[in-house]
Length: 399
Image (cartoon, rainbow, N blue to C red; front, side, top):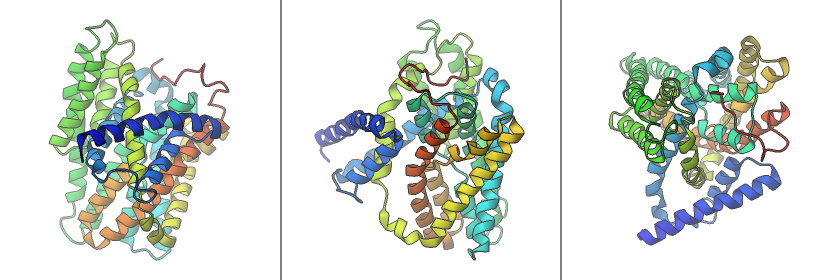
């Protein structure tokens, strides 16, 4: 594809974010949902307006956007914020993961799905979409105990998901190959992500924010994020976990920072717009039709697991009754991490590879479009979205 067409296409897609914001204010639909729908409309499943070679940009854009989001989510793990909400975050995240695993695996097995496939689908169902969740929170200027809990949970959910999914892969592999391979690989991935986060985060916490006193510059911010993504890819480690660990280290060690993540928030918008539009463009409605009753069952069982786990974890974590009742439903968005898990599961269990990808694509479409709507609805229902969002500030766990 000619370079001129590439630039024009990207310019039009980024500019579409302005129109989407306007539509969002009128319809009250989350921006992420509208961007995914826009992607569907202009993609191959819709009007096919995008040049075919635009897919060459998707991987790089997705990795950079998700690493930025992971870095920002890691910033929610300030010690001060965790002392106030950490217990609740850990309890909600644990019980949401546990309830979702039991609900999906048990429910699908009872419906006659092979146990191995039911477990693999349950593992895929544990993943969330931190990018979509944070986008809803920032866009709506939501703030409050449930908002902070939700941001904290999505920051650790994928770490939980990687570990649990690795155990499931090890269990499934036990019938065909080496029993512990999946578990060892998962633990190694987590430990290496922590190691890379320390290697980048410790010096970044000390040196950044000193050129311009108290506030990292744009050059510092983008170099940290790109270094996280690059080293994680080079060493075949989760860039999501690497970004989260680095963000958490910087926010806790950089005592001289006033706004540790200010510049990342400024530059992430165009990348997120492209990421969500291209994600929508990649949706294949043929896969949705093929999912059938098992796909519908998966959706229902995942919603049940989120609801039940949030209710239990929120109650034990100190949320009020009404807050704990609905917090789990704010944790429904799902996207790229789930697809990555499905691909990994397909390699570990090739007999189920095609069915895994078909069901995952179909259900991710539902949760990527409906999930942000549920998140925003819950936060609005609980009174954590201000009536005049223009005057409200985004939530800040560091304050």
